[in-house]
Amino acid sequence: MMTPQDDIALVKKQELDLVLTRFDEDVAFTLGGALRTRALAAGMSVVIDIRTWDRQMFFAATAGTSADNAEWVRRKINTVRRFQRASYRMVLERGEGPFSPQSGASSADFVIAGGGFPIRVAGAGIIGCVTVSGLPGRLDHGLVVDGLCEHLGVDAAAYALSAQ
Image 1 (cartoon, rainbow, N blue to C red):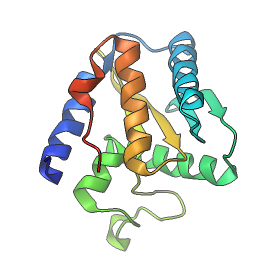
Image 2: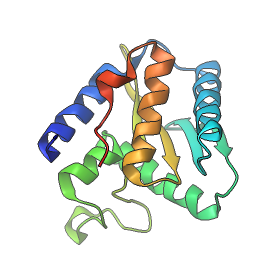
Image 3: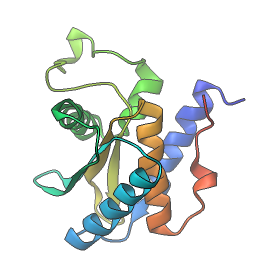
Image 4: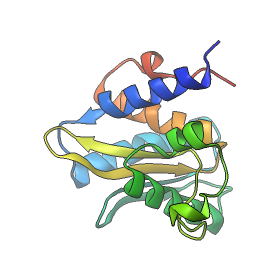
């Protein structure tokens, strides 16, 4: 059985290993479409957002989502951008809930919840994020990781968090 420390180490490995060689509109569309297809096949109600820090490049919502999901996505994006790590890693390191007042990260604009994952491009670093909202945070995170693994042609089993 994996411990929280094991999960943190695995998420760090995901962040370092799941690196794109390039990122542009075509990559965003291909990755986003694959995530949407995966969600539809599993009957998941999710919102998917893929972006660089300055603009949205893909957005999709499946049946059963609401404006609340898009709001969660916005707050997860802000968290990934500010802390430069997966929002689920923030859950594992800090616990779910609001940031402390000392952090200066208002709950109106930031959230500690899984589903935001940094887009890292070789030679460029973190340039944006892939974000999913609609499932429990661990599953939102897993959907993104599975989609990135598929896109990169790597074995998703090597990066999968255990079921909890």
